[in-house]
Image (cartoon, rainbow, N blue to C red; front, side):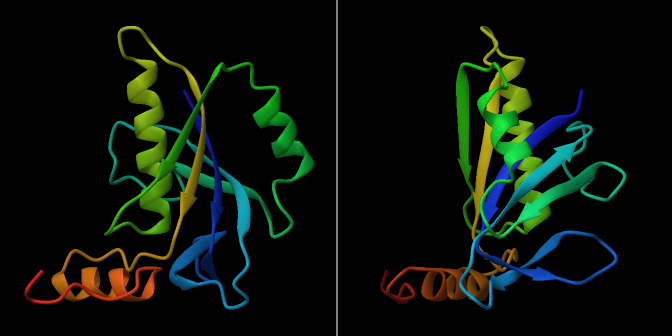
Amino acid sequence: MAIPVYFATNRNPIESVVPNNFGTDFHPDGALTFGRATIKSVKDESEIGNSNLAIDEVSALGFTEKLRKAIAENGERHLLLYLHGFDYRFREVMMRAAFLGDWYRRGKPGIVSTILAFTWPSLGSLSIDAYKTDYRTRGCPAAPSAAS
């Protein structure tokens, strides 16, 4: 079962062999980008390649009319908002949001939701230096000190 994740991000778009991908820095204009990621399977969270995850309907003007209609007319009574923490790259965020949506759907009782994710430009690296950089430059006033 394919799982759509509707997203907004202030990450920088990057040119690569992966279409519609985003990096670890802020968008150069400070703009938000909107779109949809469709995940074919959440069985293996490390499978974030093009064969499992497709990104489309990318727009800097808000969700496209097609996506606004899909979100509003989805028929789901629940909305799952996902905001990631430290150490996540863009495609990892999409996979994790889809995984959580699937996990809630399979629960007892099952809760089927429309999934919206916001992803900010974390460095996506598990290290003290990356954490301090994320903390200092990604919207927090100062990096934690050694005394913290």
